[in-house]
Amino acid sequence: MSLDVSGQFRYPSPDLAWLSQRVEEVLEPALPIVDAHHHLWEEGGSPYLLAEMRADVDDGHRIDATVFVQAHYGYRTGGPAHLAPVGETEKVAAIARAAREAGCATRIAGAIVAYADLMSGPLLAETLDAHAAAAVGALRGIRHSVSRDENFPDGIVLRPAPAGLLADPAYRAGLAELGRRGLSYDAMLYHAQIPELAAAADAVPDTSIILDHLGCILGVGPYEGQGKALFASWRDDMRRLADCPNVAVKIGGFGMIICGARWHERALPPSSEELAEAWRPYVETCTELFGAERCMFESNFPVDKAMYSYRTLWNAFKRITQDWPDADRAMLFSGTARRLYRLDQELPASARPISEAADA
Image 1 (spheres, helix red, strand yellow):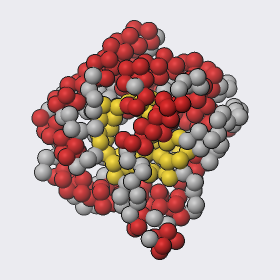
Image 2 (cartoon, one colour):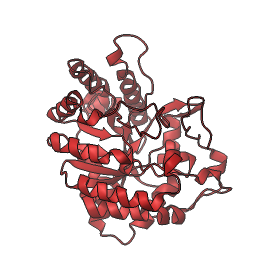
Image 3 (cartoon, helix red, strand yellow):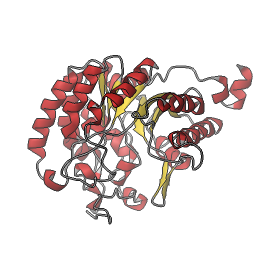
Image 4 (cartoon, one colour):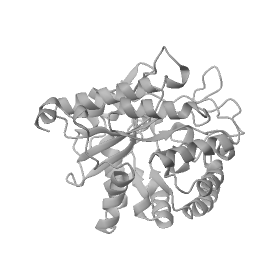
C-alpha cells in the first residue's frame, strides 16, 4: 500500500476497466434495496456524481432509494466557517432533484446525512437549521467523525479526531440536540472506540445512533494479519453496544483499504461468492446481536468501488442471506434504512419534479 507524504493511507480510485472483467448475472432483481450509505464527490480526478451513481443504481438491482452521507464535498468557500458544510447539502440536494427531473427510478439521496460540528455550542443550532433548509425536506442526520487510533498519530486516511470526543460534555450536548430535533447520529470511528460509543449511547438515550461500517475494523499497520483476534474482540464490544436500544448498525465498508482490503491488487475482481464467504461471519454476528430490525446493508460507494462492482456487492449480500426468513431480509435490504432515515416521509412540493409539484 502506498502512503502519502503525511503518512496516511490513500483510498485507491476505482478502475472501471478492471471491474468490467467481472460481470455477474443479477440475483433476485426484484428484491427492493435501500442503499444505506454512499457518497457523492469529486476526489482525485475521479468524480462520483449523478452520472456515475446512476450507472451503478441502474445496473440491474432494484435500488429504490439511497442515503447520502457527508464526505466534505462542495463546501462553501465564503461566509461563516460553521456554515461552510451547508454547501455540500446544497449540492447534494441539487443532484437529488436533477435525478428526479431526469426520471431516475431510484430516489437518489432520499435521505441526507450532513456534517456539523457537534462541539460548536450555540452555533450548532444555526448550522442544523441551515442544513435543513438546504436539504429541502431530506435532512435526516449528522455525521461528525471521531475516528482516531493511537497507532496512527497522523491519522490513516483522514486526520485523527481529538481524543475523547464521545465523552466530552460539549460533544454529548450536540448529540442530545440531534435527538431533540429528531435527527440521527451516524457514528464514524474505528473498532477500538466501540466501547466509547456504547457509553455515549447510554448518555443520550433519546438520540438514534447508527454505527457506520460495523465499527470499521482496522486491518493495516499493527492490525494486519490479526483477523481472528480482532474479530473476537470486535464481537465482544458489539455485544455490549447491542445492549443500547438506540443503536443500529450499517453492514458494509468491507472494501476500505484501511480495513485490510486488497482485492484491487488481483488480476481479476472478486466474485460475489468470494465476498459472501469473507463477509458472512460479520453479517451473521451483527444480525444475531442487534436483530435484523437494527441492521442495514450499505454500499459505501464509491470508496468500496475500488474493490468490486455495485452489482457484485449486492449479489454477495443476497448470497449470504438467501436462506434467511423473508422478514429479516426485507429489513436488512430496505426496511431498517427506510424506517430509521424516514424515507417514506413525503417530500415537500419544492423538492419534487416540476410536473409533480404542479399537481400537488
